[in-house]
Length: 237
Image 1 (tube, rainbow, N blue to C red):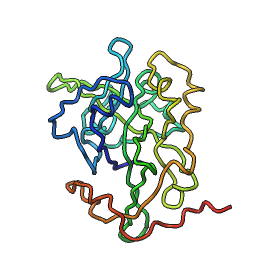
Image 2: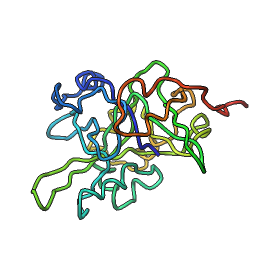
Image 3: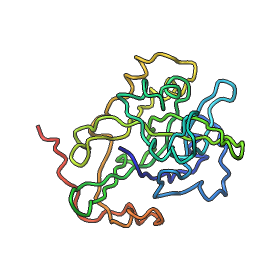
């Protein structure tokens, strides 16, 4: 799964990378840099609409489908499984027409059972921006009449590197897949499904970090500072 991440790249730079227009105010508290993005919080995403083009926006993390009774239902839909995203009632409509990219500098995962879990930070070797595959939706609040945009990160089976600590990981789209994934006019489920594979083992590096990241109120670059050694990655032949 993916339940915590960093988004430290300025939205304007994200817009440049993805050839988009940013709608995020530079002085917004949630504009970053953010080292502890958690579910139900604002999540920076890249979307593309046929009538508005490609944009960098902020959506609530946790997809709220149109049939949801309340906003709270999004908390249980922070991730969509690659194996069922095309058929799940919660995600299938978004998978067809409302796909997005979640730009992230890295994400957190925890290892351990029966006691305190050890957190790890997974990031690209050169601190590049990851393009996580996502889906988005809009939900109308029946009480206020306001439309709330929300998004979920698509996860897939862990690659060999990631499997040393967890059996799932975010889908990381290669550059050559960005345009097709964002294209709302592309409706080829078989092809889109083929993009949701585990990434190569060398895409990410993993470092052990402090348990300070466990508290969602904690912020700052100190959260990703290495502490101790990462586990063996199990990449030997």
